[in-house]
Length: 101
Image (tube, rainbow, N blue to C red; front, side, top):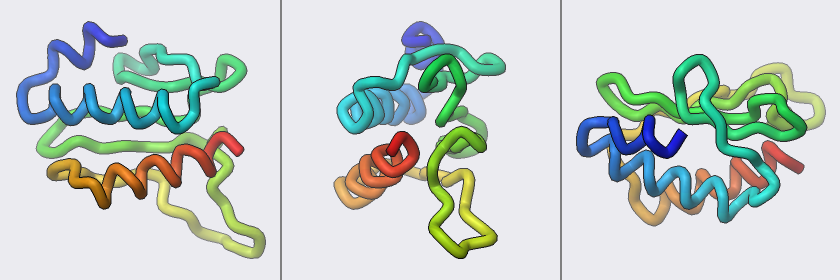
């Protein structure tokens, strides 16, 4: 999985390395893996979140993520990132923690 991140072109490589650090710090129990060729993180063998690089970096969450609020019928499942500022890093950490709660 780390080799997949290392093979990404810049600026996605740096963003992917930072995302890996944020996700592992926010949810140490998640296991890094490849999921459909994308860097991903699993809980009990099932993918919770992943990211990929296209025109921008996309951070996505699967149905295994605990993101729905009580009474909600709709929840964003992916986020497009142009760059990572401290504000985005804090938001990602918060979302990942909720996803594995």
